[in-house]
Amino acid sequence: MSEIKTLHPVEISKLATGFPRLRRTRRTENLRRLVRETVLSPQDFIYPLLVRHGRSIREEISSLPGVYRWSLDRLSAEVEELANWGIPALILFGIPKEKDPIGRENFDEHGIVQESIRIIKRELPEMIVITDVCLCEYTDHGHCGLVREGEILNDESLEVLGRVSLSHAAAGADLVAPSGMLDGQVAAIREALDAAGYSKVGILAYAAKYASAFYGPFREAAHSAPRLGDRKSHQLDPPNVREALREVAQDIAEGADLVMVKPALAYLDVIRRVREHFHHPLAAYNVSGEYAMVKAAAQRGWIDERRIVLEILTGIKRAGADMILTYHAKEVAQWLKE
Ligand code: PBG
Image (cartoon, rainbow, N blue to C red; front, side):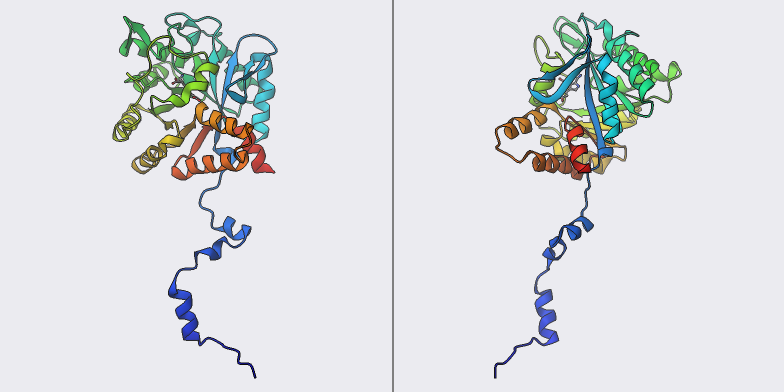
């Protein structure tokens, strides 16, 4: 007679509590979904859109495969596609016809960004239109402020940033996003907007923006690399996180409605710290270099692109970002619907 060995209830409970059974909730896809703590949605994304002069242009950026510079006549179709994928917001970057020392097209009523805003708001009024407010794409020296004797002038540049913001507000922008890391820029812009009656237009402050090599492909795309020197005199030094918290506190004190950490991947700890210290909506910018690295490796077949992208964006959200500016937005929105 073979003996079937059974465990006494006391022994069973001892076994079961001997160590935790964390694998139980990972057993099936539905269980994993049930206990999932971070869920990506197209609703989280802000899509960067580069606009330029000319007609019938959809020009791919070589270091950013899948990202294009658009001319005004092709803009509506692209924005409509974003809306169809459930992406609620975009951020505009303009490439001017001509550059000069102060960047005149930046605050021209008929500048490339101002015209783009009008087109988008006419065709899709509910699309959230954010504009990048900086001098670097518009100035011939490529710096984020006015320059005298090789030095970026802070206070003298604030008036220009106010003018740029006003022209964007007048064209219908929902949010302006100062990205130049000049001191006092948020206060100057808030004051300019309020004085002109645009109290409803908000500010998404690039509050903690680091002097990063990850912007390389964007500068090629937007023709905005500085002709001489770098951006270290105004953007944050990568080793510093307490200083980033001071920047965020300052921008909030000056009137920022939303704050941003940029870049994202090498700065996940900064995102986490900002999330824990402040209660303002927090954006993270998954920048051009982060996108380019993924695309380059994917093109060589070295990585599983889809899984890598979802893992990266989930990581940024898990770190504490409420929303992500990303060139991956469109493809991810499509994957999430499949
Ligand atoms: C400045 C600006 C930059 C980016 C966004 N706004 C470039 C810079 O600071 O040099 C970078 C975006 C990216 O790399 O994706 N106007």
